[in-house]
Image 1 (cartoon, rainbow, N blue to C red):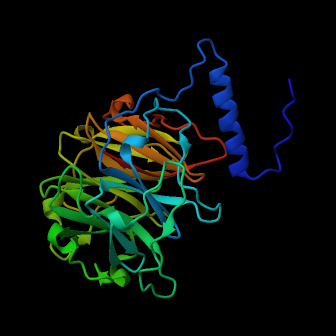
Image 2 (image 1 turned 180 degrees about the vertical axis):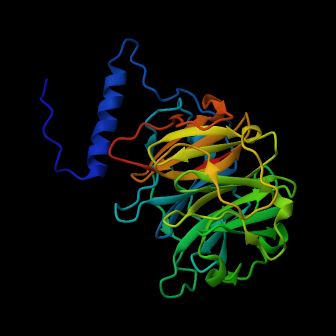
Length: 340
């Protein structure tokens, strides 16, 4: 057998690719020759798409049924073919009839019909969607969302890095959205950093990078918005989720660990604007989204590895935990996820 050479000086992306091939070869050599990839599609053909977007605005969409489920903790497969200097940064899921809402760090919103984003295979190249936007100097993508949530929703919840929260009625973000519409004053609230759709009667769960969170009823947010979470210096908000009081929120850390935090074990605040308490033990939280028992979770890494697994493989907890391994990372880190 050929001896494995020293890979120390190779780029991280090359090392990750070699190790992925080695893992697939080892699995094929096991008795029965089975790999961790499923042998059959996870669902029938669908018009629902997974949209992958890089930090620099290169995007593609791929029908959801082309992503096969793996078991939680798998290595995933390569997705968007993106240059190393412009890695994946956002994931979204929507029907092809919907629109993609792109919000910049200056809180300006632009809508792109999903049908105008190039459809590609799982491992495919994207195209820039920023060329159509009249961006200003130092303006960049900050939040990606869809204007038609798969599970419904009447309000779009948007949170800034310093914890300011605002709710926007759904009708303002449809096909009639004027390009460059300013959603709020960034001088007052900071750059937008996270979003979700809510029913109008949900509990909001705002989470920071270090795992601090607050829960309160969304009806407590006034029309003009308010401070949702008092953020410590050196920390920043990375996620907001809207779920019923009896529901759960999936949290993912940068090192690929995740947990479903049941809201029944996280006491609500009587009003927004207080400091947070620990939601998950982790060095860096990537995001948080509401999940249901039948949800599928799609997670993507900086090196463009994507994995699909069922939410019910993640133990639901009422207390603070470190989470379980959701993605097998090698010289890599999780950057985004989306939930069906």
